[in-house]
Amino acid sequence: MNWPMVAFLFLAAMVLVSAWRVATTPSITHATLFLATTFAGVAGLFFLLQADFLAAVQLLIYAGAVMAVVIFAVMLSDMRDIEPVRGRGLAAQVASSQFGWLPLAGATVLFVLFMLVYVHAAPGWPKTPVAAAPDSTSYIAGALFGSYALPFEVASVLLLAAMIGAIILTRQEGGRRS
Amino acid sequence: MNILLAAALKVVGVLVFVMANAFMLIWLERKVSGYIQRRYGPLRVGGPAGIYQSAADILKLLAKEDFMPGGADRWLWLLAPVVSMVPAVLVYLVLPIGRTFTLQDLGVGLVFFSSVTSFTLLAIFMAGWGSNNKYSLLGAMRAGAQLFSYEVPLILSTIGVVLIAGSLRLQTIVAAQTQHGWFFFEQIVGFIVFFIASIAELNRTPFDLAEGESEIIAGYHTEYSGMRWAMFMLAEYSNLFTSSALGVALFFGGWHGPWLPGWVWFLLKTYIVVFVGMWIRWTLPRIRIDQLLDLGWKFLLPVSVANILGTALVLMVR
Image 1 (spheres, rainbow over the protein chains, first blue to last red):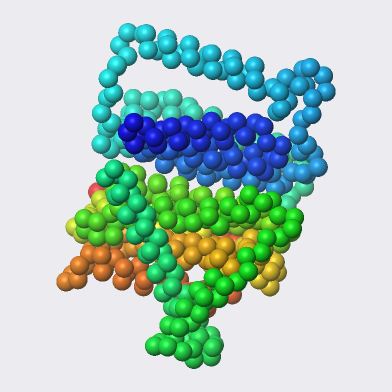
Image 2 (cartoon, chains in turn green, brown):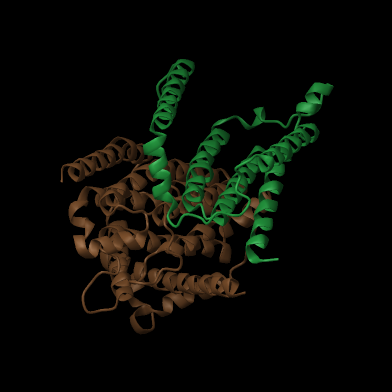
């Protein structure tokens, strides 16, 4: 077993265990911090694949900025409202954090396995590993602002609309200026 | 095995440097504060130039009781100082220390630096929440608001440099300055925004609201003592060094300079920037939280965006 393999197994275990704890831990604060660990582990996997731009952006956007937003959400909400879901009926139990993960997790695993087999069997899929680009940033920039410029711009307009919508919604709901 | 050995050597080297750097910066901070504010204590301690003070500090911290508050969230409280050290150590990876000397010259060095430093917020949140103390939580919230608002202008202020150098690799940015001249002259607006935002990111006066001792005791590290508190301080002084080093690499030509070897220039320039930071710390009073947020969102952010647009226009016309 070589060292990249050891690193991969460690990171994969870190992602899986912390993602599982996000769903099962009763405290929202702990769930938030486990989510950060999950994101950091995914960034580590990207580093292992030598996609260093993707890894750095994953850390910056998800583990950094999204975590800040989640922390604010936790801090600004009333902690008495955030009680863990206890099973009431069968439907509530399936949706709850204690029991609900089994069927959903099973379905997800089956789906991912199916996708992997399908992709592997599809023609034109490279069976040998491709050498990573020496400087992936310029390739990503070329793709984003060259051949895929239109989808990129559409996505940014969508984000802008979401941002304006969020501002309008909070203004109407609050009704008072801070 | 060679990979492991090299990695271990790098980690040990960085940790030794972090310790030595903190030892020296604490001494420097006491001296600077002593001279600026006419404090008699720091100017009269024993040893050559008062160096015994730092040794006494370390002995005191090692001997102090490590006390955990009763209602603390055990794991968060225990892990927070360790987590605060992680970004402090990781950023050394990409610093262009010498002409050919970088621990790991990543192609996205600058983005890596900003993304790793954003982890500091997690450690502060863990400490503030885990302590189960309202002053700690208030300090953590202030730190959160502050890091959150100053991260954006900090990153945007560096983009002007990236546009001129045409790379995110820190060694390439420094190398571009050896031919082009230091970016400080062209990117003076970017540098001012960068400098203000990096002082705010470090939670140092005039932006030290996160620990404002006259209002909330000591903010997020109220409940820490002994070596755990020392780890927060170690991380803070290490961050002071690394963010100054990033400023030197981006705006003052990094290792570029005549006669002396590159790494000497790099350290010399970095410590000059660190000194200016300390000078500001001991000269200015603390600002209010609304002034802090106004400065971040209404002044630094528009100025840094205008700087990017201006730089891009000039580059396009040229």
